[in-house]
Length: 170
Image (cartoon, helix red, strand yellow):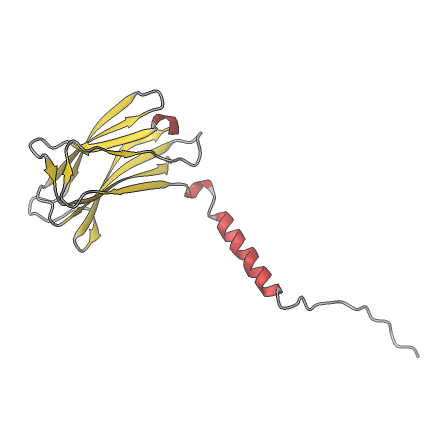
C-alpha cells in the first residue's frame, strides 16, 4: 500500500511574526486616538516672576481640529501661594476673523473668606478655570487676548501661568 499523500503547509511565520502583530496593534491604537471625540487644544503661557503688568496683554491663537464644529473655550489661571488677593479679575477679548470683538470680564475666586486657596492643584500651585465662550465656531475666535482688569494694581504678583483650553461643544 502506498502512503497517503500529504499537503505541505507552512505554519511557521518566522521570527518577525510577533513584531508584525505588535506593530499592527500599535497602529490601530494610534489611529483610534485620532478620532474627533478626543480633539482638544490647550495653550499656556508663563507669566513673569516679578508679576503681570496691567499693560501687558497675553495673546492666544486657538487651533481647532474641525473647522465646521463648535467649541467651548475655557480660560485657566495658575497661581502660587504668594498671590495676595481673594479674587482675580481679567478682561478677555475674543476677536473673530472680521475684527469683531466680544469682550468679557472674568472674575475668579482665588481664596475663600478664610484665606484658603480655591481651585485644583497641589503644593503651592492652584488652577482656577472659567468658561469664557460656548458653542463658538473657529472663525469666531481667531485671537484671544487677556490682561489684568484689577483697578489700582499696576502689577499682579503670584500668578505663574495663564492659558486657554478649547474643547468640542457637546
